[in-house]
Amino acid sequence: MDNFEQYLMDNLPKAKSFHPHYEEALGKMLIAGGKRFRPKLVFAVVESYEPLLLENSYPVALGIEMLHTYSLIHDDLPVMDDSDLRRGNPTLHKVYDEVTAVLVGDALNTEAFNQVANAPLNGDVVVKLVKTLAEYGGTRGMVLGQAIDCHFENELLTIEQLEFLHSKKTGVLIAGSLKMGAIIAGLDLVAQEKIFNLGLKLGLLFQIQDDIIDATQTAEEAGKPTGNDEDKNTFTNLLGVDGAVGRKNELIEEINSDLAGFNEKFRENLMGLVKKYLV
Image (cartoon, rainbow, N blue to C red; front, side):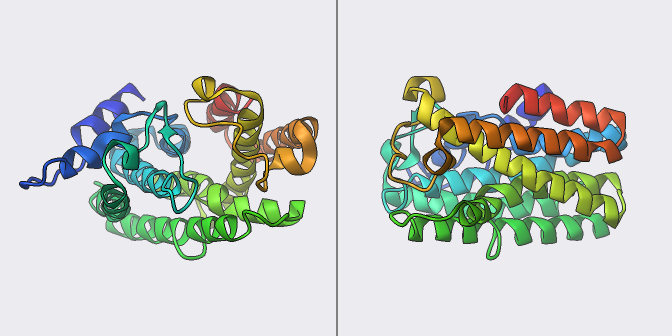
């Protein structure tokens, strides 16, 4: 993973011009860090099945991280969540301005596909990866989830509706990261579907953990504003903190059970990530 972090630093978006801060802004939220959870999911699959392709998967993982980062930049804008802090740092519209944040988000969105398209992998594999990222990061995936989240912000949803929302807003890009790793590793379509469905559960687990953090940690502990979701559709608001923890534990058991069909190395890699970030 240290190698990937260096790869990211060496491949920050470049755009030389006389603009005073545009190029700097392109990389600011990428440099700010984060868990790199989605890239780690790609690597968890590739390392388990085709470790010789691990470095070849770096551009794909970087593309996914760029797409994820664009979504965070836009999510933090005043027109959406109006957040001042992200990854322990001031949000992009606070450092610069809203126009810069919108344009940097747009740029990272398109640069994500440029990274994937230029990965040193078989051409057919690259096409499948681009299609997968577009499917889960766009119209019917992450963007749909964000649209539902924003529209129903002040209207109570059912738990089924909330799980649908987050299966799109958070889950599909996490599940898609696993599936893209499976595509790189050459797993068959049945295995790809199984790994994607497992990833959807992982995405819900990720969101529930995020809601628990918001309800129980300070902004300093979390590295972003917390305690602002009291009137929003969250798992902790609908189920209570104890209920959310219970649902989280159910998902961990289901994921552990679903992993039985995969090789030992992948089981170890994935559960290692679950224990590190989601328990």
